[in-house]
Amino acid sequence: MARRKNILDQGELAILEKETKSYVESFRDAIELFV
Image (cartoon, rainbow, N blue to C red; front, top):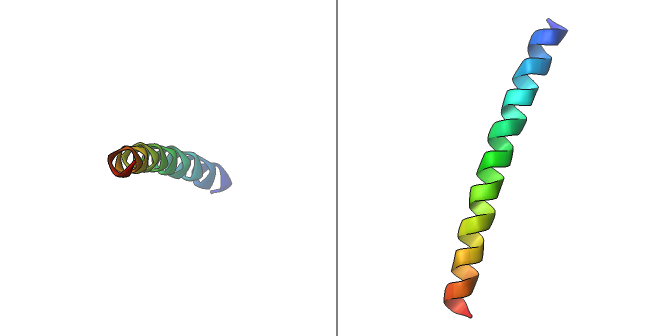
């Protein structure tokens, strides 16, 4: 049970990292447009 939860957490972390990266990139693009 704990191992299964561990794997799930790692998957969620990977997804979260991906979303954060794309969010930061689009945020950077928006800043460049305003500057």
